[in-house]
Amino acid sequence: MEWKRYGAKFTTRPEITGNFGVVTTTHWLASATGMVVLEKGGNAFDVAVAVGFALQVVEPHLNGPGGEVPLIFATKDNNDVKVICGQGVAPELATLDAFKKLGLNIVPGSGLLSAVVPGAFDAYMLMLENYGTIGLREALTPAMDYANDGYVLVPNIANTIAAVE
Image 1 (cartoon, rainbow, N blue to C red):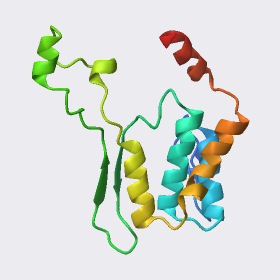
Image 2: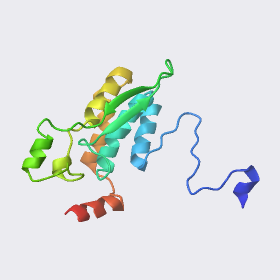
Image 3: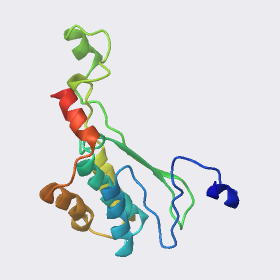
Image 4: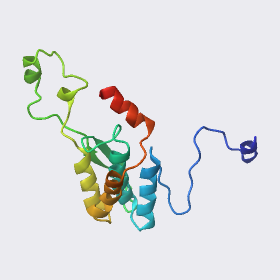
Protein backbone atom coordinates (compact mmCIF):
# COMPACT_ATOMS: atom_id res chain seq x y z
CA MET A 1 0.00 0.00 0.00
CA GLU A 2 1.11 3.54 -0.77
CA TRP A 3 1.10 4.75 2.84
CA LYS A 4 3.75 2.22 3.87
CA ARG A 5 6.30 3.93 1.63
CA TYR A 6 6.38 6.90 4.03
CA GLY A 7 6.62 4.79 7.14
CA ALA A 8 3.19 5.93 8.31
CA LYS A 9 0.92 3.51 10.10
CA PHE A 10 -2.53 3.28 8.57
CA THR A 11 -5.39 4.49 10.76
CA THR A 12 -9.04 5.04 10.04
CA ARG A 13 -8.64 8.72 10.86
CA PRO A 14 -6.80 11.10 8.56
CA GLU A 15 -3.76 12.97 9.79
CA ILE A 16 -4.65 16.65 10.05
CA THR A 17 -1.88 19.14 9.36
CA GLY A 18 -1.72 22.78 8.43
CA ASN A 19 0.76 25.57 7.89
CA PHE A 20 -1.55 28.32 9.14
CA GLY A 21 -3.54 26.51 11.79
CA VAL A 22 -5.76 23.52 12.33
CA VAL A 23 -9.23 23.24 13.80
CA THR A 24 -10.86 19.88 14.23
CA THR A 25 -14.19 19.10 15.83
CA THR A 26 -16.93 16.49 15.63
CA HIS A 27 -18.80 18.47 12.95
CA TRP A 28 -17.41 20.01 9.77
CA LEU A 29 -19.40 23.24 10.14
CA ALA A 30 -17.90 23.85 13.58
CA SER A 31 -14.41 23.13 12.22
CA ALA A 32 -15.06 25.57 9.35
CA THR A 33 -16.22 28.15 11.90
CA GLY A 34 -12.95 27.81 13.78
CA MET A 35 -10.87 28.24 10.64
CA VAL A 36 -12.80 31.39 9.70
CA VAL A 37 -12.09 32.84 13.15
CA LEU A 38 -8.37 32.04 12.72
CA GLU A 39 -8.29 33.50 9.22
CA LYS A 40 -9.82 36.73 10.53
CA GLY A 41 -7.01 37.02 13.11
CA GLY A 42 -8.65 35.41 16.14
CA ASN A 43 -6.64 33.39 18.60
CA ALA A 44 -7.15 29.84 19.87
CA PHE A 45 -9.43 31.03 22.68
CA ASP A 46 -11.65 32.89 20.23
CA VAL A 47 -11.80 29.71 18.15
CA ALA A 48 -12.73 27.58 21.17
CA VAL A 49 -15.63 29.87 22.04
CA ALA A 50 -16.96 30.28 18.49
CA VAL A 51 -16.65 26.52 17.85
CA GLY A 52 -18.31 25.72 21.18
CA PHE A 53 -21.35 27.81 20.28
CA ALA A 54 -21.46 26.46 16.72
CA LEU A 55 -21.48 22.91 18.10
CA GLN A 56 -24.40 23.81 20.36
CA VAL A 57 -26.42 24.51 17.21
CA VAL A 58 -25.19 21.88 14.76
CA GLU A 59 -24.92 19.03 17.28
CA PRO A 60 -27.63 19.81 19.82
CA HIS A 61 -27.87 16.16 20.81
CA LEU A 62 -24.28 16.34 22.11
CA ASN A 63 -23.87 20.01 23.11
CA GLY A 64 -26.04 22.77 24.37
CA PRO A 65 -26.31 25.95 26.38
CA GLY A 66 -27.56 23.79 29.24
CA GLY A 67 -24.37 21.76 29.09
CA GLU A 68 -21.02 21.70 30.73
CA VAL A 69 -17.49 22.40 29.50
CA PRO A 70 -14.30 21.90 31.49
CA LEU A 71 -11.66 24.13 29.89
CA ILE A 72 -8.03 23.16 30.51
CA PHE A 73 -5.35 25.23 28.77
CA ALA A 74 -2.05 27.10 28.89
CA THR A 75 -1.13 30.32 27.14
CA LYS A 76 1.94 30.96 24.99
CA ASP A 77 3.08 33.56 27.54
CA ASN A 78 2.65 31.32 30.56
CA ASN A 79 2.93 27.54 30.41
CA ASP A 80 1.10 27.12 33.72
CA VAL A 81 -1.98 25.00 33.19
CA LYS A 82 -5.18 26.90 33.90
CA VAL A 83 -8.72 25.65 34.32
CA ILE A 84 -12.07 27.32 33.83
CA CYS A 85 -14.58 25.02 35.43
CA GLY A 86 -17.67 24.99 33.29
CA GLN A 87 -19.09 21.99 35.15
CA GLY A 88 -22.62 22.42 36.38
CA VAL A 89 -23.44 22.51 40.05
CA ALA A 90 -26.47 21.01 41.72
CA PRO A 91 -29.35 23.44 42.26
CA GLU A 92 -29.66 24.75 45.82
CA LEU A 93 -32.84 22.79 46.52
CA ALA A 94 -31.44 19.48 45.23
CA THR A 95 -30.58 18.18 48.68
CA LEU A 96 -30.51 14.61 49.91
CA ASP A 97 -33.56 15.40 52.06
CA ALA A 98 -35.45 16.68 49.01
CA PHE A 99 -34.75 13.44 47.15
CA LYS A 100 -35.76 11.38 50.20
CA LYS A 101 -39.08 13.24 50.35
CA LEU A 102 -39.65 12.09 46.77
CA GLY A 103 -39.08 8.50 47.88
CA LEU A 104 -35.62 8.23 46.34
CA ASN A 105 -32.65 6.62 48.07
CA ILE A 106 -30.09 8.10 45.67
CA VAL A 107 -29.75 11.11 43.42
CA PRO A 108 -31.00 10.00 40.00
CA GLY A 109 -28.32 9.51 37.35
CA SER A 110 -30.45 10.86 34.51
CA GLY A 111 -33.61 12.83 33.88
CA LEU A 112 -34.84 16.19 35.11
CA LEU A 113 -34.06 15.51 38.77
CA SER A 114 -30.38 15.02 37.96
CA ALA A 115 -30.07 18.25 35.94
CA VAL A 116 -27.46 20.77 37.04
CA VAL A 117 -27.21 24.53 36.72
CA PRO A 118 -25.55 24.92 33.29
CA GLY A 119 -21.90 25.92 33.31
CA ALA A 120 -20.91 26.08 29.63
CA PHE A 121 -22.10 29.60 28.81
CA ASP A 122 -20.38 31.24 31.78
CA ALA A 123 -17.15 29.32 31.14
CA TYR A 124 -17.08 30.42 27.51
CA MET A 125 -17.76 34.02 28.55
CA LEU A 126 -14.90 33.96 31.05
CA MET A 127 -12.53 32.52 28.44
CA LEU A 128 -13.53 35.12 25.86
CA GLU A 129 -13.27 38.00 28.32
CA ASN A 130 -9.93 36.98 29.84
CA TYR A 131 -8.10 35.44 26.87
CA GLY A 132 -10.01 36.26 23.69
CA THR A 133 -9.44 39.00 21.16
CA ILE A 134 -12.88 39.13 19.51
CA GLY A 135 -16.19 40.36 20.84
CA LEU A 136 -19.20 38.30 21.83
CA ARG A 137 -21.16 39.18 18.68
CA GLU A 138 -18.33 37.94 16.47
CA ALA A 139 -18.02 34.74 18.50
CA LEU A 140 -21.77 34.06 18.32
CA THR A 141 -22.44 35.09 14.69
CA PRO A 142 -21.62 31.73 13.04
CA ALA A 143 -23.84 29.83 15.49
CA MET A 144 -26.64 32.37 15.03
CA ASP A 145 -26.30 32.08 11.25
CA TYR A 146 -26.59 28.26 11.41
CA ALA A 147 -29.62 28.59 13.68
CA ASN A 148 -31.31 31.20 11.45
CA ASP A 149 -30.41 29.82 8.03
CA GLY A 150 -30.52 26.11 8.84
CA TYR A 151 -28.13 23.27 8.04
CA VAL A 152 -28.39 19.61 7.12
CA LEU A 153 -28.96 17.44 10.18
CA VAL A 154 -26.56 14.60 10.84
CA PRO A 155 -28.43 11.29 11.24
CA ASN A 156 -27.80 11.08 14.99
CA ILE A 157 -29.76 14.28 15.61
CA ALA A 158 -32.84 12.80 13.99
CA ASN A 159 -32.26 9.48 15.81
CA THR A 160 -31.96 11.26 19.17
CA ILE A 161 -35.12 13.29 18.54
CA ALA A 162 -36.97 10.08 17.69
CA ALA A 163 -35.61 8.33 20.79
CA VAL A 164 -36.75 11.04 23.20
CA GLU A 165 -40.01 11.92 21.43
